[in-house]
Image: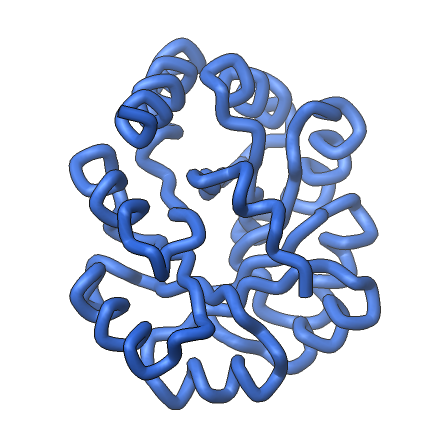
Length: 201
């Protein structure tokens, strides 16, 4: 699977949308702040509709789907226009749909066995979730020594206080998080700008 899109998007915001009408203002605020990628979660009823709207209207952004836990959700997300899929764990049905549709799949892992299963399926970039609970940089460093071909997308516990530490690790492809999506649209724009400033210092 092609994960090269992560080279241009070091922060992959986890976007939870409870109403479709929040989609465009939220993503436009992120884009103004310099972040051009969004992982819209499938936790809410309007997720597929939000992904479709974002894919049609936010043409300067890369739109993906997160918290995808089964094949039906994955198919709905890809049909709506999602260009990458993120799961909290590994699901065979999701993997099969992503393979069929040629869409990058970032499956969640926290243990060596889960990493080995992902490797057996040809996955090389894995979501490490929840990173803050399962040892963060220290844990990923230990895993990376055992699995040198793997890169991680740590999510859960990443914020502006540690984002630079995560991204400075050679085994981290990018980070995920929702800390930049709190408050008003102006605050979201400012938080995106600040996050990029931190990692570019």
